[in-house]
Length: 187
Image 1: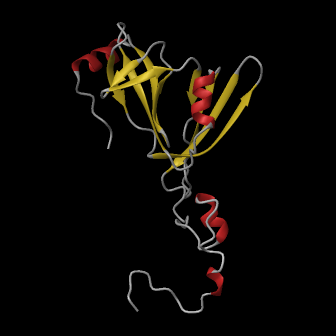
Image 2 (image 1 turned 90 degrees about the vertical axis):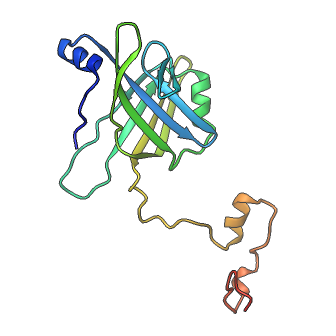
Image 3 (image 1 turned 90 degrees about the horizontal axis):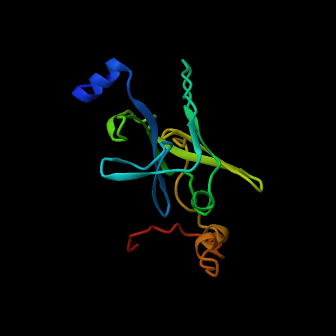
């Protein structure tokens, strides 16, 4: 259902075409949520401060199709500083949530209104490219349905266990158990 704009400031701004706009990105990394905007200074939305990333941020459009496909889009940040690059490169991102909004901003830099989330999306991959002068980070995000058929959980193999507990050999002989293990049962 389309969103109905009811705020008088938003309606006035839309009628006059006298407003700025900015992207607001809420990216939930493993070690905390990052709030980024492509606007020239920080913005506050819903109590969160969106930091002005010293780079150019773009979000590709999501393509529509009559086929059953998983829509995805790219978030690209160019001229990324070292601290932002460190946030992306040092954390697992697969499956982490991304929300993207478009904000309508008044001449004084305050947010008039914020418009829709682009998909209920999850990060699926990222790429980074850098040279001596600049860095570019691209994050691919897809619908939360992207991993619909994925089997969650861990395997009872030494490799799976040692991924989380490097010195644990608990599953070294799991393959030799003949009787099925009934977890949570006294039988």
